[in-house]
Amino acid sequence: MEEHFTQVLKKNYQEFKKGLPVFSASYQTWYSEALPLIKILLPLRYNDFIRLYEKPKVRKEITKENYVIEDYLSDTVVTTGFDKKVVAGPDAAIPAFEQQFHIVGAILNTLESSLLDIRREIQAELLDAELEKAALLAKGKLYRPAGIVAGIVLEKHLEHVCERRQLKISRKTIADMNEALKKYEVIGFPEYRHIGLLAELYQLCVQNKKREPEQNEVADLINGADKMIKTIF
Image (spheres, one colour):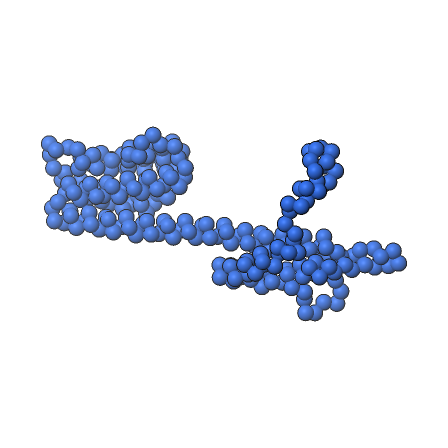
């Protein structure tokens, strides 16, 4: 590595080395912070994480396979024979730390996935509540307001789906988002056609002042929006 820095990169290796953290000084803080995190968020790997650090209470001999991080921190080196050939030394701790590092990484991935599930669940509950309001408005024969609320619910959900999937959309209308979802194969033709019909009903409620939306049209819009928020993610 020093040769690569000095001859290939033409940089000062010693200066670079000074900027690196000292493992023996930094590890204990990292371990102390990681341990309770694993206990709470990934309890099935808690004992594994500790076992990679602590010296076994019963160990007949130290080998590369059972060398742990605590051995490294105590400068343990095992040699054999007249020529003092190293059987297990500091480099044997690298696999143990790599496993610990990956365990923490798994927590971060799990946490991100859990937060996404929580966000999705909360959003679904909020949209369900809005659809219940739309149903109440329709029950009171306020069909136009009921259709507008249902259309907004559908619009919000499709916008969230497009954002989560990082789809490029020109405008955040139901029609434009429907085109994007079909283009990127998030939905098939039946869903695409259904959303198109729902968009037309929404526009009827919002813009068409020549006639009032009918009860069955608003019911289709409410039921359709409810189906979309439960089947398209």
